[in-house]
Amino acid sequence: MFLNCDIGESFGAWTMGMDEHVMPFIDQANIACGFHAGDPVTMRKTVRLALKHDVSLGAHPGYPDLQGFGRRSMALHHEEITALVSYQVGALSHIAASEGGALSYVKPRGALYNDMMQNENALEGVLNALSSSPHPLALMAMSTADNRKLKAACKHHGIPLILEAFADRAYDERGFIVPRSHPNAVHKDPDTIIRQACDLAEGRAIKTMTGQSLKLEADTLCVHGDNPDSIAAVRAIREALGKQL
Image (cartoon, rainbow, N blue to C red; front, side, top):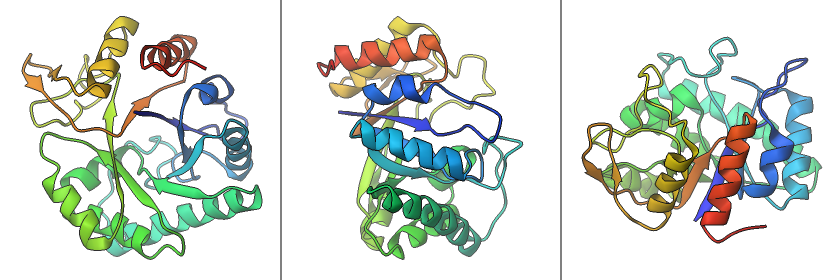
């Protein structure tokens, strides 16, 4: 089981996250590409940091929504989504290549990620961007209670799929993460986060928001590293999964 983290989200004079602290404990870095966060200098620094720690490089493209941190949806045609994803992936891919690295996957950001999971138009736009890439790229997407449509769409476009689950988010009965607007959407207790991470990694059922059992197929776990408590949780998850560095 791999650990991934949304990263490289500083912008100009504003610092977001604790990238240098979390990078040694993750396997996959979802690097912001400038539309919701990040800038060219931050992108380059993050690529260098990831390569230093032998962490896989992934693009984290989102809607053009700096003010909303990429968490606000936009009504776009699938061709517009294809173009904005290609634009962001292309920029990060060039920076990665200039540093001797290469992107291996794409994980859409926030609202684009959620829209992709529930809207065929958005998913089509993202997959078209990946299938037209000059280099092979996998799609990292949310694992739910029923992944058949997602798998079929990726297979149709010839795109490898990386199924993702969340260590620190509450789930509903369909296997979707509970929106952040809900007061209990994000787990804060480190023991709860570590327990959910271990259950997901070992294929055990977790509890939904309403107490129902939910079993998710997952290749990677999303963790967060934006404060000292979250860094400690990531390190504890790494150790609990038997991957202590």
